[in-house]
Image (tube, rainbow, N blue to C red; front, side, top):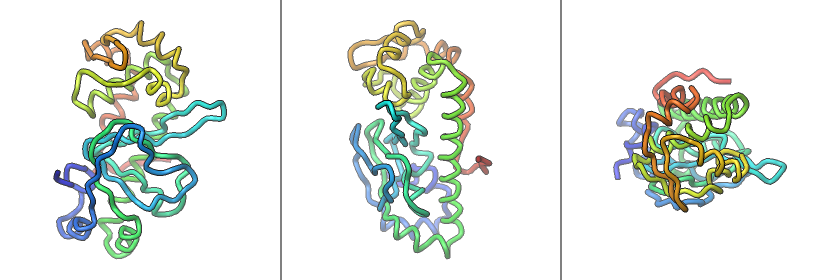
Length: 228
């Protein structure tokens, strides 16, 4: 599996990539696997290839919510380069990712500006995604958010059938499972069965989604992202 399928690694000049290549370890990640806990400093960075990783926060009332979802366009654990992470990272969709030791990256960033630039762009990507999630959660209704969630998974997985439970969607969006079930029953473009969600009309889902989906779809690590 080519590490350059990760878009952050792909941005590096060949000479800088070769400094990382020998230290990249291909990992198979499983659904629900915790990569690091909140208020810890991860020892590893993860460059997803076809896995999907959620940066998740727990709420005081026992719910959780994904503040960002990162796939092949980004890096997980980038906050560890400067300190602790205040969220935990969990595998939302199984697949492959390359693992890289944090200390190795820290030894390089001060003397290799393109590696530093890659890390900064990866951080900006996460910040922009978190800011968009915050905006979406505050201003948009559950049907819009759920349509966006389904469309995003469809883009990453390239599959019309998703293996997912109502509880998993609830954990990701930070809403009650009952609200997920009720909304899915009234959402156009999907067919729901136990443990599965089939996309039958993508255009219908796009019409029901909020504009956040289309904004986030345009994000690429090569862009200069201005975020809070």
